[in-house]
Image (cartoon, rainbow, N blue to C red; front, side):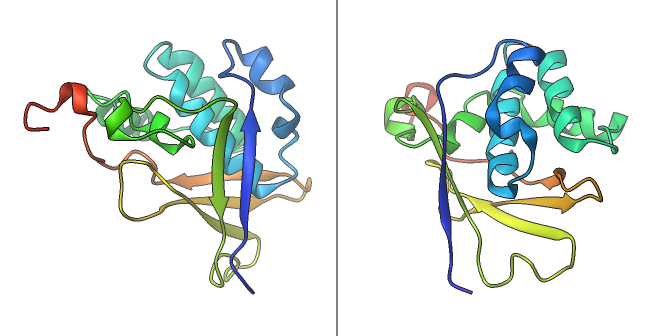
Length: 166
C-alpha cells in the first residue's frame, strides 16, 4: 500500500466543547480526521486545559484520560505551548509557529499503518521536527475511530522569538 497523505482543514480552533463536537470531523468515521482533531484539542490546552482534556476525552470515547495521562500532558506543556501549533501547515520556528489559514493538518499513513487489526498508526509532520510524529487510533464496534495513543508532544525546535541562540 502506497503512502497516503490527507489534508484535514479547519476554519478555526473551537472555543467550546459544543463547537468541537459540531465539527464534521467529530463524527469520528475517518481515522485521518480523528488524528487531526487530536492536534486541535491539544491546541486548546494552553488557553483552557480543562476544555482541552474534555475534547481529548471525546476523542478517546470509552477510554477517558487517566490521571497519569493528564499529568503527562501538563508536564509536556511546561513552557512549550507552541508544540501542537507546529502541526499546522505553514507553522515553523521562523514564524513562531504561526499557521497558515485555513488551518490545515497533513496526516499520513504508510505500509505498516494497519498492521494490527482494528488499529491505525498515522503520522503527522511538525514544522519543528525532522521526523513524523505518530498517533495510534482504534476502531470500535460502533464504527468510530478513537484516539488510543498520541506522541505529538515531544520536543521540537524552539520558536525563534524564545531562542536566545537563534
